[in-house]
Length: 203
Image (cartoon, rainbow, N blue to C red; front, side, top):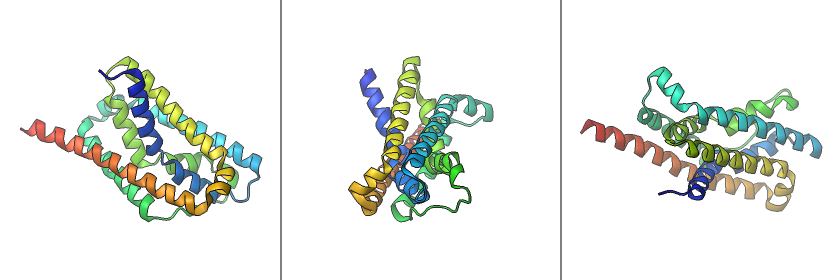
């Protein structure tokens, strides 16, 4: 039987890579070059809070949304996994240049929190993972692990300038692309699980 600590670590590591920390860090640095150190830290805190709220809502109400729209979990697994895989491909092959923004002070929620950190693929994966839990303790531990993962992202953003100084922009780009590989593997697992369950039902 899976223990609390095993479940916590499994959920935490999935969410940590699912939130694409180094891609978010690279984009955050690209979008805040004109901000002071204090303004960057304040922006990082606002991004973290916005991501935490969005993730909690998505993780907690997956089953409710599926029931409301009559969508099966396996069909959503396939769709969400496909979107997540496309996001991973973009991370590996795309660029991390900042999207245009007229108001630098208004970028915390949109686009940094949504859709850069919590994009369509991440949203689908959060709904699927939240709908998979079967016990109350799993919901509580899952939310705790999710909060820990989001806080880790927040620490990276708060320390963004220091990390950039130590690792360099090229180092962050390499880490971002490696994260994309983990996200691609997670996406493939979600899709394969959905397809396998569909085939078992068909038989």
